[in-house]
Each structure stands twice: as structure tokens, then as C-alpha cells.
Image (cartoon, rainbow, N blue to C red; front, side, top):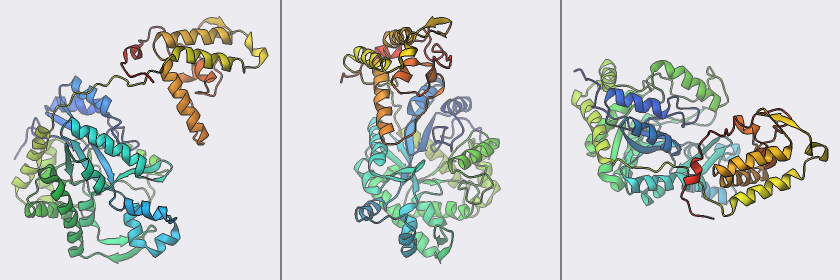
Length: 465
């Protein structure tokens, strides 16, 4: 059977470059490709957050394709137990505790993934609440390897308007089906897991989600070509049939083309502070997670053992259900204007802060003249030029908020540095947003904010402080 690849599939599990050091493609690339293929919709599901929503919404709107907000959440049903143990002074990452509780330690520390999709605005707002609360109450890990975790009770609390897919091969159901052995942190085998036990644990999760989400719970199928995924694929279909749950095919796209796999692998190595050839590198060792057409997915299904013992109709239904899910989802409109709170008398506050900091400069610098953007200025004159421009374009509140955030971060010991052209602003330096004196180094302020640039923050209608 041959598919045209147009209007007959919806990608519901996809990552962009907002899935930091994991996704390669941009929202715009996905939107343009959906338009070319005449796909009716697409869902972007970043790891643990919704940061790509404004850019993705704008990109898909530009191409007239329905954008469905979603998220691949970090799911861990043992997170409340970890918090309880932490309250008792027990660190589940300590070698002693892990040694005494090897299997429980693995379940508490390792995250499972769930694909969550918004049916409507209520679902979108609930998913925002879930991911935000996960950072507040479920943050676990060290440094850049921290994960904002959600557990089942939280998901039930904010279930309205959400569709749940069972997840990738690291999802709670698929992971139980794939896990033949329990291993400790060092990779030592603790015990073998019989197939019966794997099925029982998978069924436990299926019943749990089906009872709460009903027709909005789907069994997610994937074909990446990694260890034990064919058994998982076929068993998932069997379990879905038994429990009357619809299947949906997803490709867990992380990049646009097959060749981009190497880029994604390098990004994963950077994220894990290791090398691409390191045996400790955690990644999907397969180049199949690109933005496939339905025809390519069908070839994958037929050309490998995934189809063994199954009918073509099993594949057909799993693809058609992607369209069904897209139809369930409303075309949500978003206001993507910057939402910066307006601080009362921000203009005067900003001028006062800058004037105070100017007084802290060494006396011999005050009247010294520098050439900035073709103008000969003193510190006082340059500060006045910048302040007038910032205030004229409505940025006073923004700079005061940025100053407060950075001051707070520095008190916590967090490192900060300037990004790009911001280093050319004397006001940023005086507010200690940046740490390099731009006049001393002859840096350009106009590169940061030229007179010709718009003042889009002037029209933000936000409540005053």
C-alpha cells in the first residue's frame, strides 16, 4: 500500500531546539514542512516545559497549520516518597542508601516520560500549572541535570482538557515491557525480570491511566529500532486491544532529516558532559527519529519485524488516530505579546539608579571622553543618551526587573554573564546587569538598541505594580 504523505498523518510527539541540547529543528522548520506536506496539524512536546509555545504558535499560524500545544513531562510516581524520605534526612542519591535499596533507588531516581497534549484552552492552562508546579515541588537532580517531575495525583488534579499518550520507550508502560533486568547505578544486574511480571506492571499503569482519562488515553507506538522495541510495539497493540484503548503512532521527532542524527548525538553528549563515543552516553542509538512521512512510517512497519503477526489495519488505525486526536484539539488562539509587568514610576526609578551608580565611578573617569558609535561622550552623557532611548521605547520596567533578577541570582551564588550586544550598554553596566565597562573597551551601544528599532513594549497592557 502506498501513501501520498499528504493530509493523512499528524506528528503528536516532537521536539524542537527548545528541548535544550536534545532537539535540532526549529518550530519554523516543522511548520514549513507541515505546510509542504499538507499536514493539518502538529503538536510540539518539549521536555518538561512549554517555552516554545510563543514561537511555535507564530510559526504554525504563519503557514496556516493548526498548532497543538503539548509537553513530554517527566513522570515519576515515586516522587512523593522521595520527598518524604528527604524530610526524614535520607538522601536517595547517597551510595549507602542505594546499596541497601537498589531496586527502589532506581525507580525513585529515574524518570519516565509521558506525552501530554492540550485539547483546549483549559487543558493548556492546566498543563502550564502542572509544569510550573513541577519546577516548584518536583525538582530533582543536580546542576543542569535537574528534572521537574510530575506524579499521578498531580496529573489527576489538573486532568481537564488533557489528552495522555502512554509515552515513548521510556514511558511508564513501555519501560516496564522493555525492562528485562533490574540494574544498579553501576550497571550491575540485581535480578532478571520475568515476562509475566513485566506485563503485570505495565497493565497496572494502563489501568491507572485508563480509569482516569478514559477515551483521552491512547497507547503510543514507536519504531526507533532499539533493543526490545519490537516486542514492546507488538505487546502494546495486544494490550490496547484487550483493554479497548486506541493506539497512536508517533515518531518522537528530534530532527528534520536522517543525517541530522549526528548533530543530535553531539548535542546529547554536550548536555551530559561526555563524548559521542563514550559508553556512558545516554541517547537513542538510532537515526530513525526524524520527521517522517506516513509513507516512510509504513515502510518502517513493513520492512522490519514490527508487522510480524499484525495486520496492515493495525498500522492504519494507529495513523488515523493521530488525525482523530488532532480533531479533538481546538485551534487555540494565543496573545504572544511580551508580558512584562509595568512598574509604577519606572522611568524615574531607572534614572535614579543610574545616577546613583554614576557617583560610584572613580573621579578621574567622570570627565574622561570616549568615542561611542561615532560620538564623543563622557560617562554622564552616554548614560543620558541610553536612558532617553530606553525610556522612549518603553523599556524602563524591563531593565528594573532584569536588575532585580540578577541581584537575586548573585546572592544565591549563580554565575551571570552578558549576552552579545548587551555588553555595549553603559546603563546595563551601571545596573550590574553586565560586568564589562563598554566605554573603556570601545563597545557599540547602537548594536544593542539602535534608534531605528521599534518600541514594542510601549503598548503592553499589563497591570501596574
